[in-house]
Amino acid sequence: MGTVKQAYGPWSQAMLSQLRASGDFKVEAFVAWLAERDIKIDRTLVSHWISGRSHLPADLLPLLCDFTGRHDIVFGEYLHAVRCEVYALPAGIPDGDELSDLVLHAGAAFGQLQHTLFEARQPDSPGGIEVVAEEREEIRDALDDLIQELAELRAWLCADH
Image (cartoon, rainbow, N blue to C red; front, side):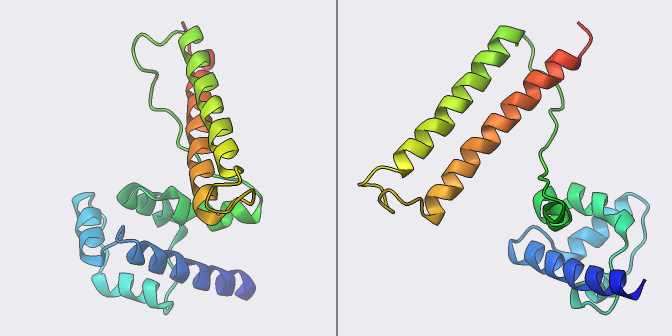
């Protein structure tokens, strides 16, 4: 068990540091937010999690996601280790979107992904025909949009109509 705890400690410390650096995690705000949900945690304990002197309990990870809105940072390293990604499931399908509309939206998102990649590979783009970091970020954003559209389509197909 020592190996698991040792691996978990540095990961949670790095994850919390990344959340703090991005401005998504403030200790006092998190402690107050938890208190509003009748979860009493001392500020010092949170500081111990950040410094690595104590490990962050796994059952707080969903709450940390809810508080920060950064599921990619909170769960990302765990999922990357098993070659998975995190995407938000749609909360519901917008009124009036029928199957054909959802398919058209997904098609448009796929077209945007193709266009973004095409532009990144142009000789006059920032990296020439090589895709540079900024272009990869734009491609990832377009891919995330497509995945979200596909998730909405899947949700519609799985719903009772």
